[in-house]
Length: 228
Image (tube, rainbow, N blue to C red):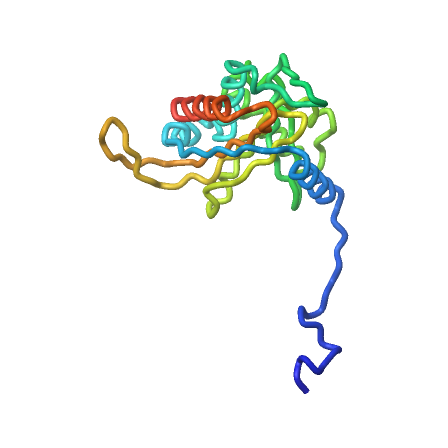
């Protein structure tokens, strides 16, 4: 009997249904809300991360901490990006609180690093490691996830993916994602040199961060990553 005639054999095979856990439900709901409500603008740039990665290897300063500090300083220097579009108005925030994506089981949570622009790379590394451990153990509390004004996602632990899209999490104006480092030739001062490159992707709420300002923010973040 052919497969077409055999109505008892599903074309997709046996189907099982699995209920998502609390984290998975929250991620799905949040992602759908963001895509439906935030008109985003996305910009990308490859940066020379050779110095940042050497510092991570030699001094124990994590790449995530370098990215968070670069974003925090850029936001302090360009305060119009440290805000949000809400109810037809622009909000500006007085503190730079970085949200950092953390792995939590099969899902992800965002932990808050408060006043990230005032902390040293070593301090940021320690705090991010502590929060990541709490997220993995399921001990990250709601207060440890509150108050973020920008989100950073360091995806360098996924070596096969060099570029990632970012989601702007309301109420924020922008978010940054960094892909996995990879070897690539770069031209500097007229010469071609080997470098370890990471691709940065900046997603912005286009209602508050327009093209020129978004490009300026990404340019400054890139400068701070390249010269940590």
